[in-house]
Image (cartoon, rainbow over all chains, first blue to last red):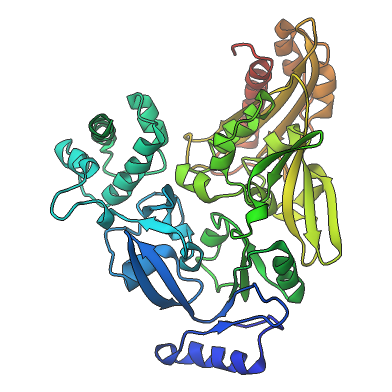
Length: 198
Length: 278
């Protein structure tokens, strides 16, 4: 990776090259731009604090790492699934400040300071969240790969109040694909959970 | 890769001026595009600049901040003039994409199939830019210059879009895709109609997307629609000269199919914008 900003000193450029050559030895580093005191510029590796399911996680990542990869590979929160990795399937849906987003399209560095909720954050101990229970009771999955994304999307769909009819649920859940085509059961699960959470 | 995360516009412009850096807002177009190649040398995340986001009233119209998301548009309390833009906002990708993707990102990405562009063209939107040389403002039609090409100069970023008031105006939008969400448009039509006192069309603004390198207005059809009664719309649309459109044949549809589709949805959109059932 080439470092082109003139605000980076030669020394930090060399350190950046070293980091790229020997990633395991790289240290997190923050470079403050000289004439832009409020700005934060990060090179090669970033120290981040992410708040996931109410817990603070400290991690050191390359700036290009997505929130999805940070969750799965760094925090071992593998409930969030990587499907298409380009924003087309919804399997990686998480809540960011209460709104559903595709975590494959968010950089971990951009998620700092936001409140992230993943599938692991829903259950209360061993007691599943009502939306999780509704999916199990309605048999709203077959292979299950899309399910955590479907459930996170359903959480937001219910919160947004888009559960007035099966048609409305289908429309507002349309960002989540299910290759097993469990859509009727998913729609029923969302409707049942919405009624319970009323 | 260098990653910048400024919190003020001044800092952002300073960083842009200092060297080549790729602007990042919602990331929904940028990030999938980076999957197959090396990352850019530097990224600048504009999403933390507070003044860049939100919709506000301004003298003679509305200001839409650059990093306003499509969900922000859907949820905003806007007059019927914006019905076309609101409908387009609902069909950008999926709800997840609408929560992240931004209005300025859509115009800067400059895809021929950008869902927001036809509606913004019919709103006579103007684009505010800021850069090392100061600020400037130009019509959206002059801002997007080609497939993935814009008038952005070196070190410039979009700060806002401006939509002038059009009292009585109502917007409408129809996107034709293989399904309604998570698809790239085959053809899109947006319209704004300002009715006359007698129920005829006072002023019509029509734009077609995904059928030319850049979405475009149809001034000939707009002129033919002025003064037209609702029952005359079908005849005017049937006779409309669509030769300004240059659709392509691709996996989503043939050029001929696209032109047929445009003529069909033109009629529906114009009738809807006039406030009649299609």
